[in-house]
Length: 599
Image (cartoon, rainbow, N blue to C red):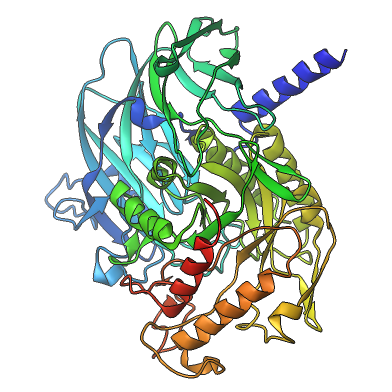
């Protein structure tokens, strides 16, 4: 009976991992591992129409109407229109769009002939924030959410020869959007990640999970899912380096469970070992590089591959600081992650939304663990009936893309939300349960900043901590809140005293090169920031169950709410590095601190 219950529970996990929770758009959740498919890139130059008044819908821009009589005229055209690069944000490519939040229409001509017996999908890595997609004058679908991939099948809609693809991109903030109206980062709009045509057979490998569960060192427990008419097929998983060939068969729904053992060399920051893995059906083959590790909490400690580990983190925004633009390429990822490695990190918190796939894969190769986060940030309208559906869709898309990336060790489901917000506890507890069911292999957390700090004592509490693996908290003592005593005398009261504690944000602002006293904040000096870091590290020696820290943050980054004309100039200055890569004094403090820990 217990065995049957266990099998039933696993099937529930599989079901929730593969099928949609709820849809708020008719974009299909994207197939996994798109780069290993037969693809045609649509990256490059796209013509654009800027539509600040939103008249493009009324004029039906996607119809590309032409004058028929001598007296006809049409008040729009993609011919002779400006050109933007895709992928890329539109704000950094045209001066007049620097602070623009609104509609831009993109057009790409596609010359394509679909091979007989094949299916064709239009794949977007991400569009911020809403996308409406039209092919040859016909609306084929929409998607909401700026940081996860989506696709549309266009097998029956593509025509041999030239096709017109038009995308309406709208990055206006929405009260019931995710994130909502206010957030502390730059709202880069546009087709910010790659666009591809992906050709498959009639039945293809849509999704798979090949990972170690938390409690295992050698036994894989996973599944494969087929999409198409011929769902019952023989399947194989091959790991050539290990001489492993595992055979199974999918059922009538296209699902096949996996369970096999092998002597893996575990992936870790010290040894980021990846294996070539082939997933084969009778009609499709996918190649991947997968590392095998497990991450778990035992008592108040975190264990990687059965060994206790301290998480030496740093926060990163998806921005190339030297370009002042959205980061999207492998080169951008290497730049950001190399800076984290130089600091001494073994983990990066990719704030506050899922970053592009290059960041995840480069981190895997470089031996950096990843904290990936949903953009459920501060004042979300949880009581709006559309919001829970949007949250579930974004959760599904985040997990599906990166479920086999061993670098991802933590799913963070919210940041700085408030218990006073109507519906907050109900919806985030529900989302946590769904995440744990969909992916039981990783740690889950919520980041909270509502702890009380009185009489040099932190009272750390929140309903969400009951459901999380880590107590993650943001605190800015010394910057937003004055010290109330000596850092080494700080006291802590945890509402869940048996869980690990992660300090997910701390720090202060400083303009590189600004000099001054260590006890006066008004001049954004490096010395003031440096002293806060020194004091924070002293305080951490008092923090119970401390399993990791992540200073806010690696580089100074663009944020419109930072309005001081001398010291900020539209930048959040809490970086350890300036936007030009210059090391502030606090960088050295953190670097030396991380060197004290064993790898």
